[in-house]
Amino acid sequence: MTDIGEAFAAAFSLVYHLDRDLGEIVLLSLQVSVGAVAVASVIGLPLGAAVALFRFPGRGAIVVVLNALMGLPPVVVGLVVYLVLSRAGPLGVLGLLFTPTAMVIAQVFLVTPIIAALARQVIEDMWSEYEEQLRSLGATPRRALGALLWDGRVSLLTAVLAGFGRAIAEVGAVMIVGGNIDHVTRVMTTAIALEVSKGDLALALGLGIVLVALSIAVSAAVALLRGTLAQAQAR
Amino acid sequence: MTTPSILPLELRAVSFERDRQRLLKSLSVRIAEGPRTIIIGPNGAGKSLLLRLCHGLIAPSEGEVLWHGAQGRDPLRFQAMVMQRPVMLRRSVAANIDFALSLHRIPRPQRRRLIAEALERTGLGAFARVPARVLSFGEQQRLALARTWALRPQVLFLDEPTANLDPAATHVIEDAILAMAREGTKIIMTTHDLGQARRLADEVMFLHRGRLLEHAEAAAFFAGPENELARAFLRGELLWWERRELTPPGTRV
Image (cartoon, rainbow over all chains, first blue to last red; front, side, top):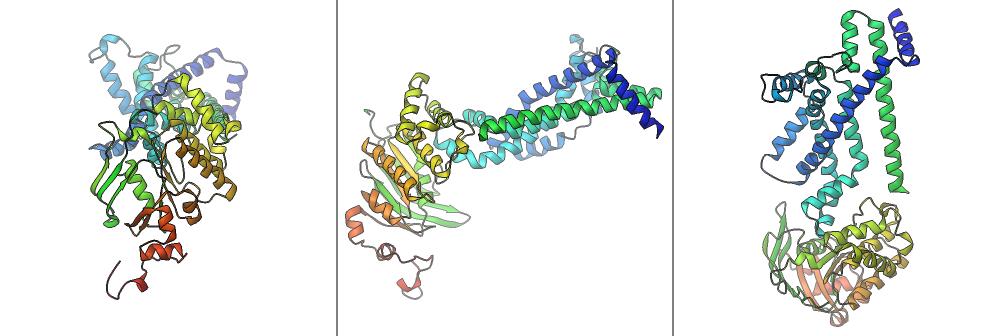
């Protein structure tokens, strides 16, 4: 039990003293995960909407695969990206392994299916309501897609937030492709894993508390944004 | 408007089936430029289906829908439709019209004038900046009409545009429809409100159980329809799906 008390003390002291290392780790965590979510949104939202709108052979299979990929194991993704980016790998010449860029790439693979699968569901539900109206107005598939993405913005924000939750909490992929190098690729989750393996459970839990607080802060910010968007629509 | 009309519209032996039910049965009709065509009939007669078929939103199971004046042009570009429950985009009233205009590739400078005019004609001028989904049902119906008005369609389909509206809102909608007709838009509209049919119709199509039973000039139709069922409908009798008393035993309508 004392560990938990110490953990809160550690967390409090980390934040209170504005620990510089902690600041650096938090910042990198946010940079990597926000970057990955941004890229994944640009790919995943139109992808999900396209799967929702278009009827083509193999569509059912794509929906199943997309839904299944939401549960992609991070270590496996990390391993594959590692192999591709390693010296001997096909993209080894880029020298990206053990850089934040590599971590972003790995997380993009984890987050894109989540955003795409959730976006597909949202857009598909909307499409049943909008289809005849948009076709009557003469919308091309591309314009229909754009209109649906914009009209679904409030719901889609939740899909993006789910993707962010996955990215910020994930340790397996960033550990493998980032390497948890101090001041270079150490993020919240890898730092926690390290402190656990060193046996400093209190510090590890303290970092964990900071991480959870961070997630809540991001979620609150999104809720605020949603509120503003919803109000702008409903006023 | 100097562009030639896509009318007349001809349906050739059009049938529509869904889940093995024949909802429209071998329907042939020619709809010409000019008169306001009102399609009447009880619920389930296939009025909405017929409109959506003509508009091209659904394809017939059999038969053809032909726009004889289209001359290779895409007929959909010259039509618009006001749905029974129109879908408003989650943006402002003006932006909803702007979106429709942009789909028709109308250059931005012209849009502003068209939007203002359409809002003015439907009495929505004060609502331009209001989010469309906040409008009342009647106001949304007016916006749907404004949205089609701005497009200046040659043919306007309306699917029970005043269902569930109070008399005042109905009056505004009917006035707008008449104004559009005066400006040369062909009106093809469904209603199950006989009073409305009398007010708006130049010609009437009477539909029952997926069949076109009568297609006549409004004056003649309301004076006395030839079809027995149409007469019953005008008298205000309820037309059941099975109206056995009108058919000899053992046969089906």
